[in-house]
Image (cartoon, rainbow, N blue to C red; front, top):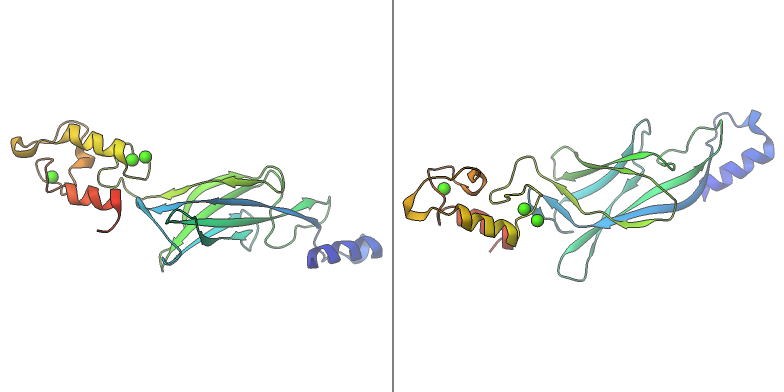
Length: 200
Ligand SMILES: [Ca+2]
Ligand SMILES: [Ca+2]
Ligand SMILES: [Ca+2]
């Protein structure tokens, strides 16, 4: 609303007196939502996690996320990316994106630095879109397809890698050898299980 008033007053007074004004018409936000996983673990509102959207050349974030219950026992982030329309010759308002901007989406946990998760190309205004966020520095134990979670397909792969008392780590099975010893056996399972089901 403040930006809108600024723009309208600039039009009324003419551009010559508005050199310091910002030049956008506020339009409906683009809204992203979805799950967040950090190092293969889902995060919740109780975790010290923030989701931030930034655009190159814009000092302030164009959006700060918050978490809501997803109704299924987990939590979803909601990120409103503030948009404004383009007005030729006028600088953009602080903390706003425009159509066709590439928005960098970061996740931050605790005192850790922000970690870039993905880039999102802003399309039209008012869009509401699910975009699950996954960030992991290293391949997680048991995450055989390196997609940021440990699910039943990864468990099936773990079973194919299982060498038990025979010992050995078959080719391609290093990710299942969680304790980095010479075999894939029950000693490795707790690490995989913890990511599959969460803390027991
Ligand atoms: Ca996986
Ligand atoms: Ca998966
Ligand atoms: Ca092992």
